Amino acid sequence: MSYQNIEVKTFKEVGNNGVLVYFSKTENYALISIPAWNWCYLWDYSISDEQLKQGCIKALSDPLFPENAEQLTERFYEYLLENK
Image 1 (cartoon, rainbow, N blue to C red):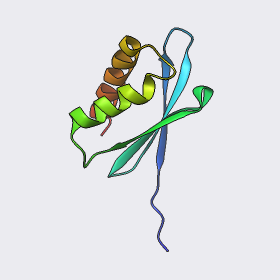
Image 2 (cartoon, rainbow, N blue to C red):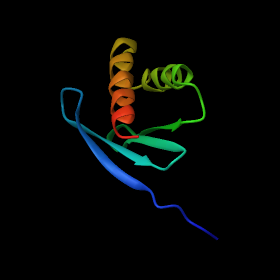
Image 3 (cartoon, rainbow, N blue to C red):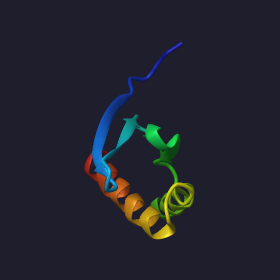
Image 4 (cartoon, rainbow, N blue to C red):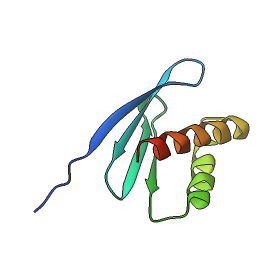
């Protein structure tokens, strides 16, 4: 059985109270998690960016207001583009 190495990075200063966001990445996907909110989202690179953004906004709309969910999703997207 073969295992992939998964790199975990921390993205700090999310929101006004410094909630920590963790990115676990492989070649094919990134798992974004916010343990303090008991929240995560799988960003699968084989799916279009627009579909992923809409899914992430929808997933973030539970712990956040829709406007804030859009802003945070855009920050995630920019971070993933820079660190792909």
